[in-house]
Length: 291
Image (cartoon, rainbow, N blue to C red; front, side):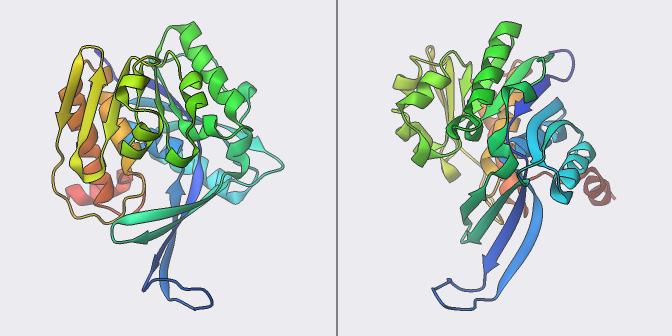
C-alpha cells in the first residue's frame, strides 16, 4: 500500500491488573506481591501496537459507564487509536488479572461490558482490513457482533484476520464462524485445538501460527514458511501475541511475503515481552527514550 493501512479492530478493551507474587501463593497465606494496573484487552492491545507501527487504526468495543472505561478511551487516543466504544450502562469495563511468574502468566478474566458487544456497536467498515479478537466469538453474548463484523467485511470486500485467543474454549464450531477469513493467527496450542494447519486451510486462506520462543510458521495452499525469533529476556509475556498480530499485519498489508511478515510479527512480540504491560511505549515515553 502507498499509505498507512486502514485497519478496524473489533475486540475487548480492558483494565489489566498485573500481580507478581514474591513466592508461590498457597491457600490461606498472605503473600507479598508487586501489583500494578495497566491498560489492556486483546483487541485494544493489538490496536495500540498497530498504531505504534504506523497503521491508521480504529478500535471497536464496549466499555462500562465508569472511570475505567473513560480512561481506556483516553489511553487509546493517546496511543494514536480512534476509539469507537459503546458505553454499557449495566456492566463494568472488562478487567483481567494476570498472575506473573517465570516469564509466563495466568489470566483471570471478567469481560464485563465487553461480553455484551452488539452487532449495532459495529459501524460501517470504511477500511482496508478487519482484525477480530477471538474472545468476541467465543463468548455467546458477544458472538453475534463478531459474526456481524466478519459479514460486514465480506460485504465491503476487505481482508480479514482472526486471533483465536483461547485454546481451551475452541471447538469445531469456531472453524465455522471464521470460514472465509483471509488469515488466522493462532498460537501452537490453539492450532492444535483447531485440528492443525491442513484442517484449517479448508476454511481460511492462510494460517500464521506462533510457538512461544520458537518463532512462527506461515501455512497457505502454496506451502509453508518459518522463521525463528531473537533471544530476549522476558519481562512480561502479557500481550506478546497481540503485538505479533500487529507486526505481521502491518507488514502483510504492505505487501510483504510470508517470511518477512513473520519476522515483523516476531520482532514486535520480542519488544512486547521485553517490557512490562501489554501495550507499546506511549508516545511521550518514546520521546524520552530518544533523548
